[in-house]
Every structure is written in structure tokens, then in C-alpha cells.
Amino acid sequence: MTEETKETPIETPEETEETTPATEEAGEEEAEEEVKLYVGNLQYATNEARLREEFGQYGEITDVFLPSDRITGRPRGFGFVTFSTKDAAEEAIKNLDKKELDGRVIMVNHPRPRGETGGGSRREKEDMKLYVGNLSFDTTSDSLKELFEQYGTVSDCFLPTNRETGKPRGFGFVTMPTGEANAAIDAVN
Image 1: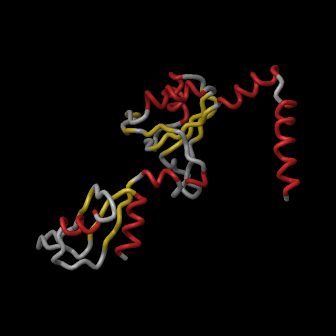
Image 2 (image 1 turned 135 degrees about the vertical axis):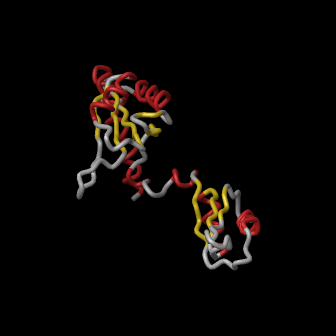
Image 3 (image 1 turned 60 degrees about the vertical axis):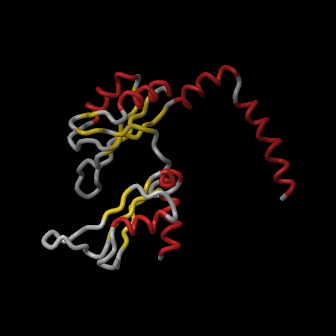
């Protein structure tokens, strides 16, 4: 095991020096600089031509991909636009993120790796809405918020009420940062 560890660092620099002569570096930089962007909250009618038209203002586009539902064939409301350069991609993010396209405010950013979908670093930064059930009908929004504030910052607390009587329905929702929400779940459950 020690020998394998010693061999890896020695071979890696040699391989790098041999495979990256000055004439090849320029070609490799261009290939590395190609940047794919995630475009979310798209109108279902938005097509590849429309994305090329809008995003093409900021640089050369090498690819546009609009996933569709496997069963229905309908667009899924998001896509990917690949630019030939990082600068063009950054310009597109700066000018198009949170802007309206075909009647919807779109999100434009760097995509997360597949392994991070539904978890990972992005969720740690986002808020999580917790369902809190089996509450006493005497529970108030303030008392529920106070309980969860022991574990972090509560950005929203909501207790649905019966439309006819106005009385609480025995459950609620608390929104707070994901890491703090996980701690609250462990403590309150």
C-alpha cells in the first residue's frame, strides 16, 4: 500500500508534462473552457431555437438540450445551454438569471452534478419546509415558532385553519435552513 502511494505522485507529474506540450495546451484550454448552464422554470412552449436566439446574444452556443418526459414526451420545463467559453456563460448568467423569457422568470446558473440532486451542498444552503403534525388545537403560530427557534432561524411559520370555523386544523409548517431543520427534527421528534 505504501509503495502504491509513492508511485502515484511520481507518475502523475511525468504524465502531465509529457501530455501537455505548449502546442496542445491551447486546444485543451478551449475544450476545458466550454461551459454548460442550467436553465430552469422554462415555459413548456420554449424550444431550442428560442433558447439559441436569447442566449446567443452572449456568445457562441455549442449545444442546447431540452429534456422531455419519457412517457408523455412533454418538455420538463428546464434545459441546458452550453457555451464555447466561460466568459460567455458568465455573461449569460449575469444578464438572464431571474429575467423573464416567454412569460416566465427563468433561473440561469451552473448545473449541479447528478450526485448532488436532491441533496448535497445546495440543500445545506436552502430552507426546508417542515410539516409538524398532531398539534394541540390550542397551539398558536407564535408558540410553534418559539419552539423551533431554539434550533435555528425560523423564516416562516404557518398553521392552516378550517375555512368555515377559523379554528386550527392540528398541523402546521415551519420553514428554516436545512441544517438547522435537521437538528430540530432530531430534537423535537
